Length: 312
Image 1 (cartoon, rainbow, N blue to C red):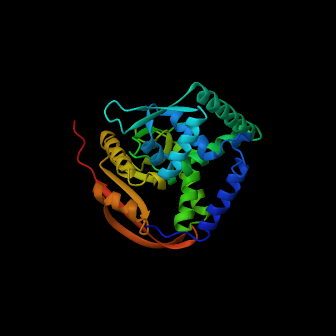
Image 2 (image 1 turned 90 degrees about the vertical axis):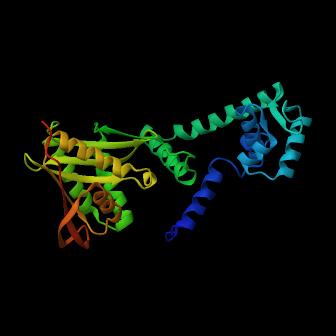
Image 3 (image 1 turned 180 degrees about the horizontal axis):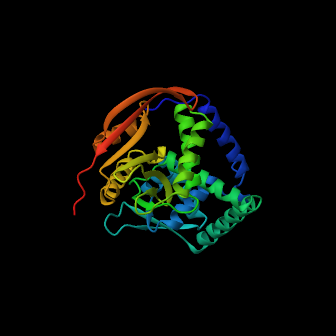
């Protein structure tokens, strides 16, 4: 298990206190109704999962079986839900909303949507997008999908270079404590790539998973026969999906097709995950040199890979 960063526990607790107040969970009735949050969630699951069982409800909402049974009984007495025995096992009961239950849920759904819409209207469009992205990030980190999303690679588009620069700066500051001069270093590479880009000999790949950018890599020309691999990055949330290896493989395949005989790269010895990817791809370390950059004393490394002669 990973160590917990300083102040992380209190930061999460502070956010939880803020958000429960923000969405009205401290009020006696949810959305000015007689329903509690748990009751509303039960209605939601029954409305959206046709023929859901008591066991499935308990698992989805992490509810005690006895408490859920009493809640189901209350809803039945109020005429909100009906049950039907399974045709395969009479002991298994399937639940569905009655007409009255659908009306009650529709009212809850409308009020919830209206309340959220009112909160969002107070924010500019850019702030709305930032808020939604942040919420998606929290969701992805705390509840990863049962199956990892498929990863696709594409060429760069307008707006990607800003993301490349910003994410390099943020991730390396958080994980290695590198200062803003590293972000300037990345910005210079990205700017030169755009200004001098030769699409037949150079390329940038952006990795996406679930519609979000999760990685990047560049290949730039040093000479007619030598190319340089640059700016390999994988988002922390996408590590373990094989993104880094796929980016490097794609980069090398392009280098071979473009007729390069050698690919070089520069990295630092503390970047263990990246070094492992390079070694696995066949790169070999050819030189090391101490330097002071990005606010730290580092050991820079030059790696290279000799490619097979281009066929034809």
